[in-house]
Each structure stands twice: as structure tokens, then as C-alpha cells.
Length: 185
Length: 253
Image (cartoon, rainbow over all chains, first blue to last red; front, side, top):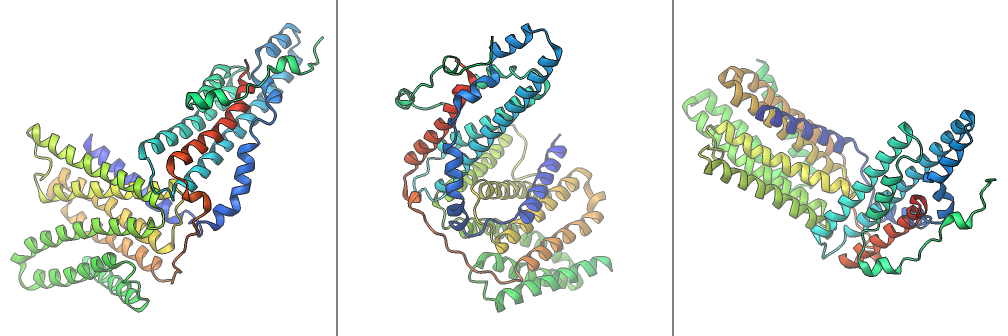
């Protein structure tokens, strides 16, 4: 057992060293970071711009409506459309989380009073959310598009792990079902 | 003959690396790294002399030099930490904590092994002890690499070469010493080729990486950089909150 562990460790070290050697080095700090900052900022703040649009993605009501039509072709079309939308939405979420993480890491590099525990917790949360996006993406591909609804709700809860004061300050998004005109009979 | 060829190849690369370091005046930038190489060069020459003319002294001298080499190697890692993270106090603090964690784990493992009656550190043989010390070095290399990659620290050619070369060398030493402790003397002939070859590979990486000159980079500390960490964490959580607002819509009521 020990033998395997030591070899595994050596293999990880070799892989890491080769990766480190071959990876393109980040150019002078500040230049790249500053150039990339507006793009990152816009990527982060684009989030939530179309909540009503994305609301329908995991809607069970739509799914039930289509199923009631008893049309295999319609069901297939709906599934394909929702699957594509859901995958796109999840990729978008993951990209935004990565952008927030990159921005945070870029700034915390210079922090004089970095709290290691808070930093590790935040990094773990970022990683967890990205993995969750990956899992939901997988579920969407192999099951029906509304399947990861519970995961999405969990995601929502995890992404909003803030203090109670901040929680109260968030404006509620109105229920989209009441807002959006739907092409339903 | 082959052993001698590998040995002389190593000496040649060592001399090349040192001459280049002296001519380019990089010794002041990486004093421990170059001290290590001066030591290794002298060790190789002394051991060669002892092997030829005073063989009974070879083994104790070899192991004494090996321990000094391990200590100097650990200091190289500290030098990499110092040079790479000098301008990044936040990342430096994270790296310090990670390295402290690695050291604490190593000490805890040694104490636990000892309290259960097994001699883990110092180990049963010199080879096992060196292997265990090299394992700690591997973890230290991994900690520094992970921190540098995660925080996207600018990786200059020289630093990259030094760290990757040393990482490859200690990984090869861990693997070969593990086999030596498991297989015993039957592995000794193979070891006489594997270790010098892996060291020569590391030397080649160092020589290539440190051959070309490199400008020392200056960091632009941005306005946001002066923020304290709690403010930074709060700001990041705010950004996450924007993403959450999008999610709330998608997740439904």
C-alpha cells in the first residue's frame, strides 16, 4: 500500500512539474489583469439581466403542458430546445463563477491581512459551485431538462451563502409566470 | 563506463550552469540555488577522489553530503517562495500556511509512528530517512506550485525552471528510494543509474531555463489591491450574489 502511495505521490509531482514547466507563464502582473478587468466585470454583472428568460428552463409546468399534448414530436422538440438552453445557461453560470473567482484571486494576492480560513472557504465554495454546474450539465444531458431542478435550487442556496444582513438587502425577483406572456392556450 | 559518462555529464552541466550564473550575475538573485550547485560540484569531485583513492571514507562522506544536500534543497524551496511571492503578500501568507501545514503533518506523522512503536523518523535505514525527507520536499513543491497556479502568480522562466527541475528530481528520488527500501540491495545497481540520470535531467532543465537572460518584473499594485481582506471577501460575495439573482429566476419559486 505504502509503495503505491509513494509512487502515486512521485507521479503527481512529475506531472505537476511538467505541467508547471510547460504552462504559459502569466505575464507581468497588473498588465493582463488590468486589461482583463472590464471584461470580467461585465461578465459578472451581466448575471441576472434576464431572470424571466432563464426561469422557464427548469419549469415543470411547461414540461407537464407539453406532455399533456401527447405529441412525441413536440415533446422531442421541447426536450431538445430546453436541453440546449439549460446547457448554455449552466455553462454561462460556470463561466461567471470562474470570472468572480479570478477577480477575487487577483485582488487577494496583494492582501496584507489575508484570512486564510475565509479564503479557503471561499475557494471551496467556488469549486463546489463549478462542480455542481458540471453535475447539472451532465444530468440535463442524460435525463429530462427539468431533472436538475432540485440541484438548481441547491445551487441557488449555496451561491447565496451570505450574512443575514446582506440576504435582506437583495431585491426579490417577481414570479416570472405572472409577468411573461406565454404562448399557451 | 556508462556510470562514468553520466557522472562527467553531470559535472559538465554543473560547471556550465555555474559559469553562466556567474557571468550573468544571477548568483545574487538566487544565492541559495547557486550555493547548492557549488556544494554539489565540490561533493562530486571529493567523492570521486575518495572513491578512487580512499574508498573506506566514501560511504560516510556520501551520506553526510547527502544530508547537507537535502537541507540546501529545502532552502531552495524557501528561496523560490521568497523570490516568487515577494510582491504578493496575500499569496505569500497562503503559501506560508500551506508549508506550515505540510511540516506539521510530517512532524505529526513522525510522532504518531514513534508512539506506536514503529520507527518512522529517524527511519530504519539512511535510505528510508532520506526518502521520508524527500516526501516532505515533494509536498512542499506541490504546495508552492498549487499556490502559484491558483493565484496566477507570474511565472518567470528562471523560477519555472528551478521549481520544475527540482520537483522532477525529488519525485525521481522518492520513487527510486522507495524501490530501494522495498527491493533492497538487488535494486542498488539500477539506482546507480537512475539517480544520477534524474539529477542530470534536472540539471539540463536548470541550464536551459537559466541560460537566457530575463528582466526582473515589476508589479503594478492597483487601487483595489489596497483593500483589506474582509472587504475583498464581502465584495466577492456581492459578485456571487449577482449570479444568484440570475439563478433565483432559473430555479423557480
